[in-house]
Image 1: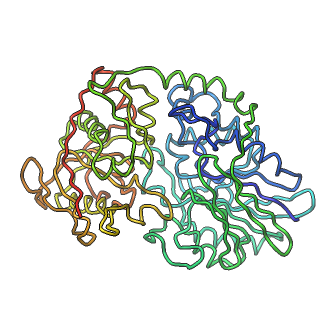
Image 2 (image 1 turned 180 degrees about the horizontal axis):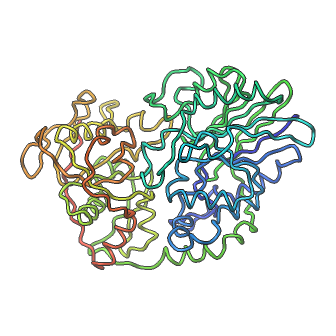
Length: 504
């Protein structure tokens, strides 16, 4: 064997093997992957991270709120595992570039992302050369989807430019061919695969967000393409290039063995064993996080807002949705608000704590208000209505929201307006009986709508929002808005409106 690559991607701050919602043990987290990683390590191996390591867990959210001047717990874990190279993911910008740069400063691994410019200057070399003790020499390219400006809060990427990944990898491979003598060329790409790896049929709109298939198809000299971003689990071969991806949250790693004449890759799931050394590294911040999560903030006046069935919660608009929109409307003083539920949420118990809030709103989004024409608002509603399909006379989730990556969070539900989604109608013609304050929505009239910053910049292919004027940018995390609303009122009355009908 020439060399071995051990790869994690989309870890999203997952270290502990216990759920933050209910403390149950789960088969995920770097504490459960550590033993497997060490088993596969050798003198001729590399441990690689392919991005989105710095966002996604309560541990990291708490860190950025209260301990951001201390070493990031993910840097401690990365150093314990002895990562060799780190690539950047889109979510690694979520808490600002200082948090990201502090992590790369403290992590004792090489930062390899080459397609990012800061103030028109590349932040890293386009590639790095690694020579193993056995003499094998490889070139390593790192890049992140250039679609980041379509989602990220502008304040977090001031001065940053993201080069087109396909063109960047193509040019970099040519640069390596002309200047280096290497045995293998590999690429860590924090982006996904836009086409079915077996058939080549497009699985999503070809926006440029994911370019893995075309990178393999157009660049013959690439031996391995390690992808991420989509949270899929696969090993495949496209045009002679081995291409891999593994699931999120430390559920899996990919091990790639490179021989002179062949490449063998496999996905390995987290095992039952827990590395207590890792838990010791994060013990103090984890303890502080858990205490913070359990502080009671207030309680519901009646019952609970627990979500037992995610599909039903969307099909019939769960009261939790009404409450989240209620918070956004109160925070921004507007009449219309939209919100989508994450792929999975827990909801609120009667006594509400931060644990309930972050289990129900899992993203570090901020709250903004945009001014939309009635025509643009209708287009946004039609985009959300694509979530549903009819199968055997039943309303179901459209396959496009399930594959290649679950995107249930791209179904938004609105309060402040009334409307019906007629699923049997053609896409683009499903919204009927649309009214605001009892009157039909007018195409040319302007309406102010509260939403998260991800959606406001067009995230989820809501392109109709891109040209909308931002009326208010609170620069306040929605989680904080929810917490403040509850703390201020103590006893919460939920104004649940049954304003959305979904029919065949």
